Length: 147
Image 1 (tube, one colour):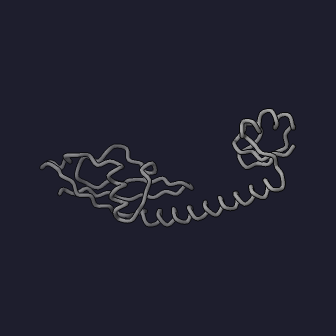
Image 2 (cartoon, rainbow, N blue to C red):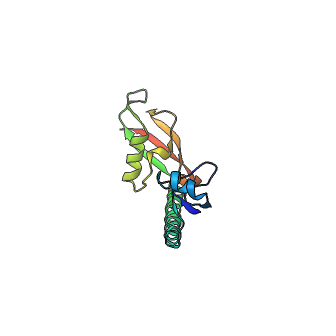
Image 3 (cartoon, rainbow, N blue to C red):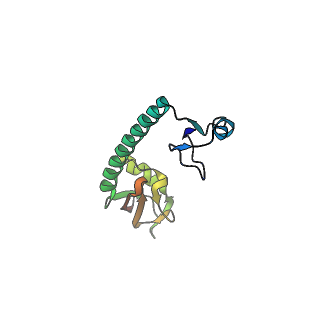
């Protein structure tokens, strides 16, 4: 029996694959657990349409992320913060503050993409790496100045 897998199943296939299985396995296991549906002509057509829609959405997302990576790469973000005479900040600057400032400047970046070893605690310049979906990367500088 031909089925369309709804989830990844080890040793059988990945979600979206059309595979051949024994009818009893489909009826007793795959269908009741919502792991697969019967590969009827209608289901195959719906699956193809959904796959095409997913492909288009993924290409659109990739285009937007490529533009963001280009805009972000080499960008300099200036943040002013309170510091003492030695240049130590009165409050650390972390990923949430950087993401908020980037968003205020029109660059929507997810905090999960940011790679910052430790929060910024002193006046100075720092390089922040941003690893985005689709394997895209960008590096930008954060310049922390005294307020």
